[in-house]
Length: 344
Image 1 (tube, helix red, strand yellow):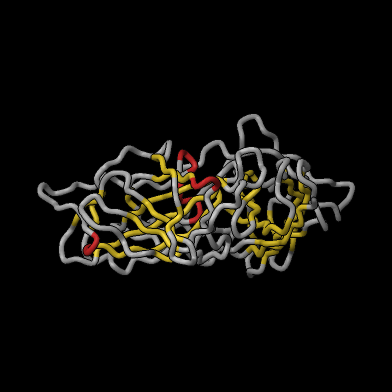
Image 2 (image 1 turned 180 degrees about the horizontal axis):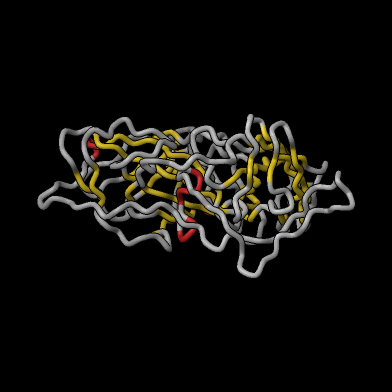
């Protein structure tokens, strides 16, 4: 949400570019076995697909609970140790209806007990405009963009704001309920993540930000083929990393296709994040230092040096570190994964 958007994990974004004034470093020519050096270049812009304004016929009724099919849309990482989730809505009635405003949201634990929450409107999102939900959209599915469906986003902190664990330990939600301005509420929607990144919502101190109803962008009519799709990704990490340090690791890209992969003039952007099932300690996007490589031939592999900070106060334990090109988000995105041990 905010400029980074709640749909980080659920919208297909196409990004490339580098920070103004940044230079893509040359490879380490004196040591051909060394990985391509990491650079700190970040994307100059992160444009999200935005839906075109929808004309709403006069007299269109407000959506009620009986009209809507609700699906949990998944969980994604935000900056600063925050996570975000979306709940998607399709219309199973015979006529169009309208959703508008910031709804009330309730969370429930595995025992079916409501979790006390302090909610606020999410910041940095578009104002509450009416969203037309047409009929014939009841087959809404997580991670499958389609025109006409709506969504609500929620976000929460996974630590106390300084990287330390919340005290007391927050209760984990396994179901969410959304109330509709037109009347009624959704049934309890099970919390699950099709991409297996996180499995629960556990807001620190019960604080949750909620967006207004938003329109889900339709997929591009003629998507441009992704030249990076034939690259497989593997991640190698050190045995352990301490809080307050920088995690140095490597990513190996191998061309599993039959044609050379030629990097574009502006090197692609990648996303890296580290999280357990309930908390995240890092999420960053950078520009890949691809210019020293240029092309990866079929069956060839290239190692790239990476680094990501581990904030002070990060709780010791095991975290999944994942790496992927931005623009590869989908139901089965290509990504590399390794387990990182944060020492005590």
